[in-house]
Image (tube, rainbow, N blue to C red; front, side, top):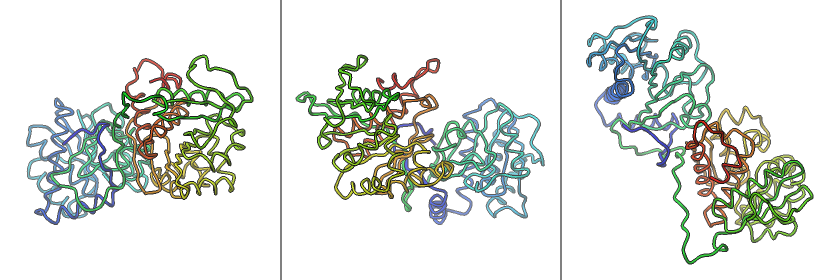
Length: 477
């Protein structure tokens, strides 16, 4: 068993892929083995996270997740604890293996009740696991509310009940666990949408199974390696970035992207403001070179277009889409493309010309590009990002809780870093600048996007809790 912390590139699986792997593993093991292993590791983790808890409530659902909870109750009872099990099934309705676990728990003297105990020191949520498909109702919903009502350690088995395994959505009530033990595989929904709020600390136990067979649906974004910098190099060795944006009243967005690119290692950074003025210097960052947009040669630059661009960026896009070999499109550039079929055609053509393109939409911008609603995007963030990559031929960074990075080759990465400190104006502009800096230094677009997203989030994770994090500060981290 291991606690999953940001760093390694763990594979992520859907519920269907996990069921396939479970079936393969079970075929080579004695009957009931995986459920017994699941119960044992759950009980061990329960003791580890709440070693002084004596009275445990084990909330068991009607399926095999409930069977895992019954096995955990058996071990807690044998180890001198006082578990009370409430079970939404019975020996006549439960799956075969869960019935066997019920018999084992009864033989061990586990106490069963029809309603949750009035007081308990810790709880195990074994209600649904990967079985959440619709809003919980009746006693199931009541028990979820009860689990959430007291400040006690709550260990969720496989997933917090009510959380969708593939999308991280919550169609109704959802357990807010302090710890989640993902069994056999890590599920994609643990890390995006509401997953990170519901799961608490995430742990993984593969139940002694060597995973083989179906390929993972995605991967957890790994900690990136530092980009090498040779002693025998110069500013021209690390690429030139240009930021085109900053319409009237929005110049800060373009300057933030430029500053981020500079601090993240780009050799030279140009900023072309679209507000009609061309000041000689950015007094806060004099290393930035301010130029008119038409004075920049797009063929020799990695260009960020759209940060604070408002409607003014639209006139620049035909030239940029046609001529720029490395292009990061953000904010108002995405909004302009969403309503212009000609620009959409130029965007799709870039891949056939061998050009690099990265799109960095938030959910509303992604919805505009896909002609759907924000709710549609958030209902299945991984699928939305993949669909947008296929439609545009671009690498896509779908921002939000558990940012998704996808590309036309069907690669999919979910980012585990970042928190609500990034929910402020300008942080998306900073991210666009970080991506551009890595692309300019020669990194492949998908790798650059993954690395920049990880570092962007990690900066927020390590920021002091008692200090606010502004985009201006983030650009310099």
